[in-house]
Image (cartoon, rainbow, N blue to C red; front, side):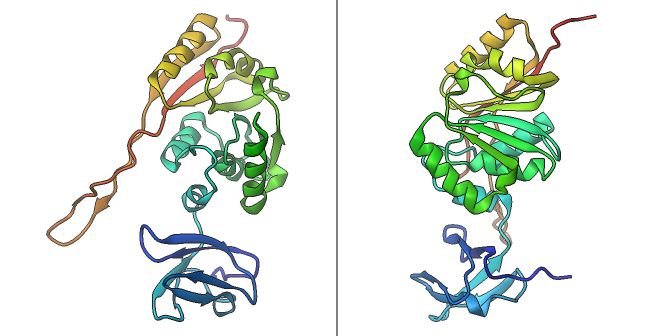
Length: 261
């Protein structure tokens, strides 16, 4: 059964790799660009995946937005966690339906959105942001795109502590993650994950040192993810000249139980 575009839903309007938009459909309203106007009334009730022609004769594709589409489109008041890194975090930590996850900082809400989708209606995301401007911007983004019954937002410094306990994962995206490793350990279930995203290797070194010296973490590892698109064309297939290379270093570790056998 085909999924139809409804009044109030979100669509991904695609022209090419550099010109694409996420928009909320509203009856009686239109999408405007320098390539023409598309009336939303013309697409409501039609299936996703259609091609539509703007009033100036340019053909657009209308799709259901993926997680990556929406995440990249979120307003960037900070550097976002890219889809390639967000996907790695989900796989490495095992975050899925029913997971309870704490995150700091919220930033633009890009990773919060991905986490809220992953944990499903039976899980929950608790996100901490110290800066009021970022908190308010993220709140707007998340209220627009995320299921807010799965998200609790705090405008406070995670260094003051994590309210929750028995968590499945703690995700850190802040300047001094090494200051949070003991706080994260107290909030996690044994043998569950901390994931830290840092742009510089000096931050990684301090974080790994803090975890090693605490004796509370096992299986510490750091990795970096690269993404390169391939242009597939007859007799001239090759990698693109641009790629998503360094965005952050990802450090993972598992919490050790307080007592050993």
